[in-house]
Length: 322
Figure 1 (cartoon, rainbow, N blue to C red):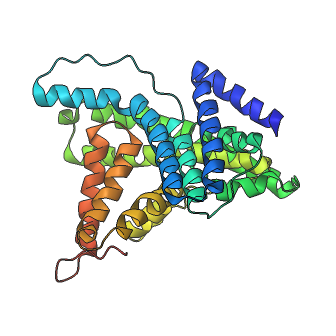
Figure 2: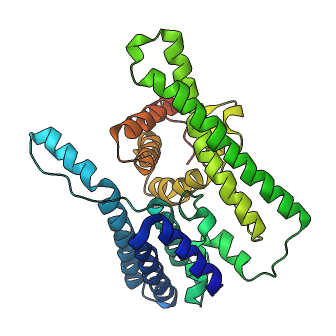
């Protein structure tokens, strides 16, 4: 366990240098906070420790990922001249932040028992196949796999190799070629192209996004298969028959995370306002997660509006389940 964790951290160090300390610090903080939350009997103390974990994790994520975005928003709204900070975005911070949060929240809810050994938690958080590009793996699914006997069958070897090669093909052959030789050529100057060509460029970009992200996920899942671990992330989303089904199949780990830790708690606070607002909250959160850009936020907000129109009944109330 220790050797695998050290290798994972070294792998991460080669990719992002000193930022490897962030994941070590995050592991230390949440390991001890979760154990304290589990042992604590006073509800107000438990809740305070949980909020401390949430603030620390989201604070680091917002600082590195969104500080300059909000500075640019302030400058645009007030004609200000605040200079952006020289902040480098650590690789994988969104993924291990969400994993930290889900672990601490699950412990607070007493849905799982915290691990006793720090190295087990560090291994879960730093597991290198999913560290930089996901999927978002939950401790409740991953940690039980740590201590089970290591068994690697010929099927695991073959399936893992297939997934790795499939992911490489999606990323290097399909995504990169379509993006460099078609999508970017059209997007650089759409006015030079016909409407049909621009439409094909949009479809091409949809294929680029899927093959890019799904390709990374396939490689991560394939490598994990060789270590006798498993986790899903995509399920042929472009074969969906509805938008509802599409979001269940696309980036499964993110969709289920937002459902369990954002949507359901939000819905539990009341039903009248949430009937209208829940889709927007879920989709805007999803947009923020994908990147610090209005493009992502507007795109996800438009998806929320489309979702509402599809699910609205005759009386105009949302059909969002809750």
